Length: 119
Image (cartoon, rainbow, N blue to C red; front, side, top):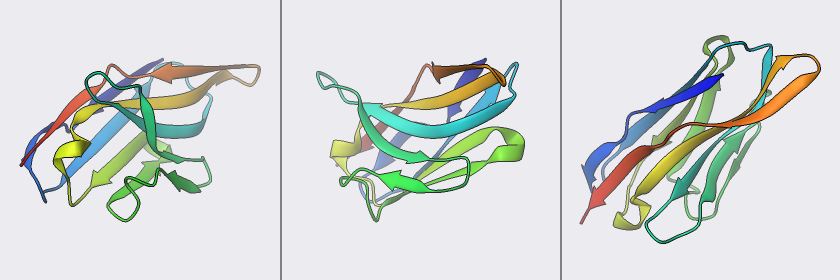
């Protein structure tokens, strides 16, 4: 199973970006999917997560600005980021709990995509 992120880049403060993460490989089902971020010198932290049923959870620092969504048919999760701030600069990682068969589930990470917000 692979998770591949895309959509990162350089944007000015106040701008928007949309991240995508597609899961591929042997997939029976996917439970929670989420976006984490890690700024230089900082620990990785959860930004947002979404269950297979569509229930969402957001960190306080992104509430009202970021929206997580998923397309279960495409095994893809998205993160719409609006009103970006310089402190949002980080590598954003996709995470998913993937079941390759009914008895085997594992947690997977993508390699990350860099988001840089200039002031």
